[in-house]
Image (cartoon, rainbow, N blue to C red; front, side, top):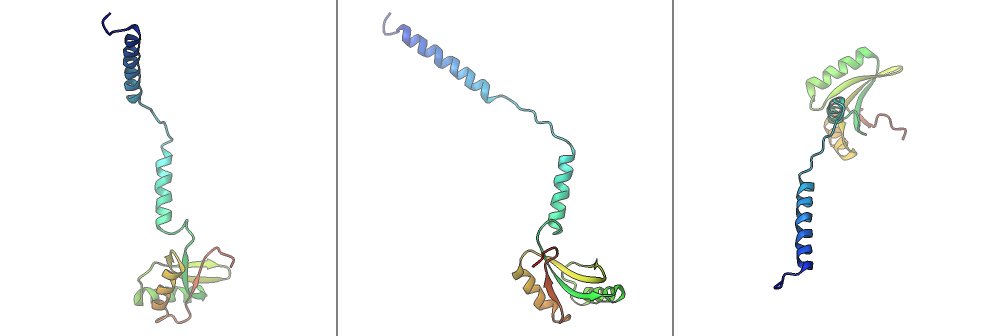
Length: 131
C-alpha cells in the first residue's frame, strides 16, 4: 500500500466515530419538570421585595399615640409632603405613622430633612431591629 497504512486507516476511522459521537452529544435535549407554583412564588417574592417587605429597610416615624390622632397625622402628611408611601402600624398600645421604605440610612436621612419641615419630631426607625 502506497503511503496508506493500517494505522492511518484506524486513525481516520477513530476520528470519524469521535466526530459523530461529539455531534450527537451536542444535539441532546433535556426536559425539566417543575411545579407550576414556583413561578407564582417567584412573582410573589419579587413583589414583596419591591414593596420593601422582605428586606431590611428604614422608615421614618412621625407619630405614636391614639388611632384618631394617627389618622389625622397621616392625612396631614399626605396633604403636605406625601412624597413617600405612608401607613399606620399598631404596636400595642400605640398606633404609629410610618413614612417610606428606605434602603439605607443615608437615603433615610435625606428624606428626614424634608419631613422635619412639617413634622419636627420625626425620627428614623428600623422595624424589627433590637438596636
